[in-house]
Length: 395
Image 1: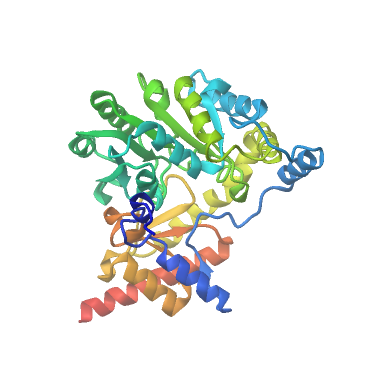
Image 2: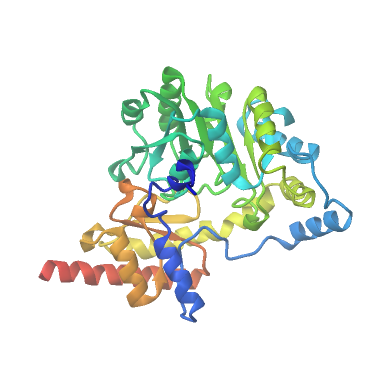
């Protein structure tokens, strides 16, 4: 029996980018002590007050089928939050609740792309982006950004690849780079989308983790609300990664069709999860700040460590829970450096190449361990890189 080309082509027959992560997890399962700096998983669990709300809802009986589009309460809550933050009129009819941001990314591309269409995405990218576009039956085409531009995309580069495309996927604050796209960058993105009649899929799951500047949703730009599909999630803002609760925001007509998609795929999100999400969102800014604060603090500590040496470069860490480090002075690829670091120092990081060739020669570090352990790991990374650079110079 043959499998579909769509399922066998998700990674185009190559790696899915998670090889070092899988290897580190195997070493942990074998009893080795590994400093884990790979994935964006909070080192604190979901806040007990959110869990209490979840428990109360479940014990109160909200364990059956929930409405497929999401509960009215959560859709209204998300809509109000988005309207306050962006100034764009948003109602529950613009909101579909999804099983996490990943399901929303898939739904957005199902809505935007016919089989065989081209969907653009920016490189570096979150590892699932090209596979998500291919899963929708579309052709995934990367648009490179450049370290010399702090990975801010150039309008000319997007324009160069936009011919024949139907959608563009962006992510700000950005995973993996930690860059927050500027007003000028987003204006440029909007220009191309309007001129080339592209759908814009805007992944904004890190919108509460901004350390420098401000988060601007491109949906708020002139002429963009009718062509932008925004992906959001409780995972990063409220440390609810395992709860799998996200949303997609778009024009009412699009959401109506996406409800049909959800009816035939996910069939909604558990009601007690949605009630907990409503409680969390209605708890206000202070709870979000509490969850974001460790990463803000660790980013400052990381800048101190990295500022004391000249070998490892830091891409501007303006948002999100990651550091993108330039290790090209060692002469190694990000993949080779990450594997050597894991072998010699039992520290697991993600190679830049896991996120596209634009990040070759870089590594991504997740700031998801206690402050003192992160500082120690970063110092070890810098020392290791310095040793490799010295050996390279002596060769």
